[in-house]
Image (cartoon, rainbow, N blue to C red):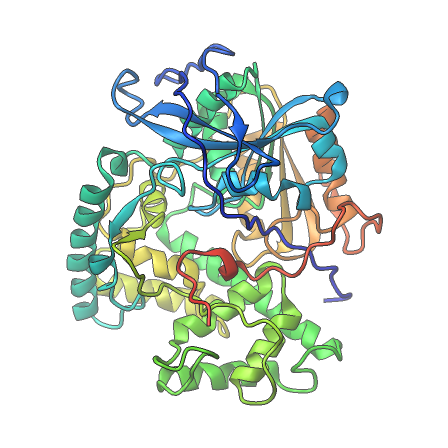
Length: 517
């Protein structure tokens, strides 16, 4: 870590409701896109964000039965600020699974450059099974019985196996037929229906994180319907369960190493002059003994898993300063920061229903393990790659939920037969979607893919530096791709790109399972 990062965030934060409008047509199931303009969206000002427009689009629950029952997708857009310079519609997705494209569209003025907003209608949609688009829901009474995510014995494995079966049955009953049709190939077909309803002959798309998987599946299904596709911080859909967990563990350990290096150099770090790794180990040991409590949550001790979440969420932005202050406070060495993030990790929920977008991951990734012996071997493998972080808590929390769940879009190498170049981007030190994932996706896509490498930190690169942002704009607007092998150094351009500088990102602030003290 050679110089301090200028910190930006991707947060899309406005909670909104969509207005009921007539349904629109959708594309055919067999991979052929709907004719442009075959369906329309009735737009009206959004109830909670009147500066944006909202509408709905009807799509089949089961794309193999295009004339069967439908659900409504929630759509939001911000129209191009300069109609005379308008290129078309830019469809966006902020990731997840579970991220709201509607809220992403609301937050577009604080995220995208003025030039991109001038040129495009920015359109976001909540994917099927998410948010306002018929979410996957379960009974809170069943959800709240979820065992601790990290298994330590065959008895724990057996308990999780039985619970996961009961959870899946309950969520399927609560959600209805859509439950079995929320994988990313279905979302890609929905997105082609949206393209047609917007009147666009070809799709222009920007996706982050899990939103890149939607884009990748679209590229497979509709290779000749792409105008521009920008994929920022990529998922790698070719990885089996071991490679998935190993690479996630290595990535979050690398991100923690970068944080520790920053603390060693920067006097502003709340732990400067201390052994960061020793502080970290003390916190993990205290959590294992049941004696560590999160600020504002005195009724139950933190788990080791929740401590590990601090290491992920503090390096995603990255939010190193906040992370250092949180660790110092948890270690009993100083005051709380002015803002305390919610306690991370899955929590009990109130009310009748709980959302479970993890089902989308279960249908996209086969993460099954046979028994505790295999599970323990997977954890040991992660531990070897992450001596400080142990493992990445995100997939470790999701894996038991997916036990024995049908995978309708299993992992495979990408097959792209289109002629349009696809632009990828990634930071070298991303704790959540490892740099190697984007590099591997680029190899799978072949000569039509161009990877922009940001030599810095965090999850998502658009907006972090001028040289990590302008190439995306140039590609989306003018279809000019960076030269192969283009790298963006830290400090690569100082021109202000956004009206308002964004604050550090601590992602749990907006997750439905966060508990605010």
